[in-house]
Image 1 (tube, rainbow, N blue to C red):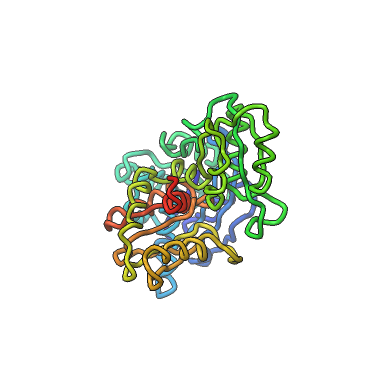
Image 2: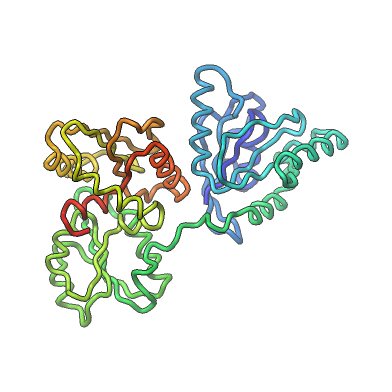
Length: 377
């Protein structure tokens, strides 16, 4: 869950983040504009679970760089499940937030520096503006933090959490076979995040799990006493797995599971058919959530472009963006292909889907695209 702190410069956002985190994470200074880029701190809030606190630049920043910093704040707000609008009790100014479809919790900070009568008047004004009472804090004194945590719990929307990735695919006691390449693209000494998340979820759901690499798949299937209820494979190995999978096993990919849990899988499935109508003059955007140094046979930069150009023509224009780089204007694209987005929260993925839909641009994801092109979707 992403909790984004927004407000004007010097309202005490960084002090509040430090107080919530219980440690010095963000730099605090009386100089306006100290926070120039977002600062993120993972924490655990009892009653909610794992969260990310996000500190942002002031909404009233100025100048050319100030405008870019404000844009960074707007981008951070797109990831928010809950927004803490931090207001300075001494300045008594309510900044204008961009339109967002998430709960906004007003927090009046620096209350220890304000006359009580002025504070009461400002709190009343804030309550009337937002339709909810403001939480009063003095972050540097760590006052009001317990009340703020309680208010955050109460403001959490029911639909903030992503659905289970394997819901409807496996039940308690089912056997899952995970096919996970450990090739040059795999990080040294660890599993990639979608594999970790899937394993953890299946353990929580009391499923039985067997893991193997594509080259040991046949031997693994031969060693099993029963047919796996589902086989979950890397997108790149779907075709090879299908050739040897037992008749009774359902086949899917980690990327498709993420599409269902974090994105709009119905829109993704409908959009992927645009591939059939791509021409050499078309333009495709490939978007990766993570940033990494590409290696040979990189799926986003090598495999997908090669497969798309083989169908549409070698002059097909393909743009690639990574991390939080994502164009505001998508009008020139015939199709957007997004990665599984294991590094993004659901709110941010759905914001990108909303942006694509509002501009009439089809959007799908890696796993669905690979399965469609291989004619096994």
